[in-house]
Image (cartoon, rainbow, N blue to C red; front, side, top):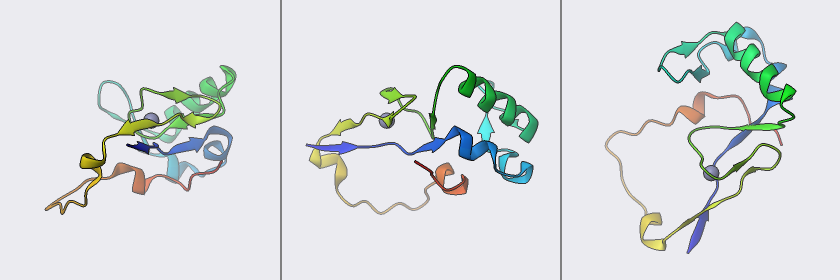
Length: 98
Ligand SMILES: [Zn+2]
């Protein structure tokens, strides 16, 4: 059994990023891309809640202070797989700062 850890991003670090990097970084629940202003509002709200980090991608075992607490993954699912096409939105996100 192995553990998968989702990436997380430091909220204060994201707020220091220029607008052009925050534009479209987040997708709202309705599926629309959020502009930089909306992203800052969201991040400020998270800070106000006392959160330190936010998850990048869906994570159902997330601690707003520590980040992803890990997900056990059976070894079978961890085998190398060749994808014809793969999309990783995390790659376009800013550097993770912990
Ligand atoms: Zn996770």
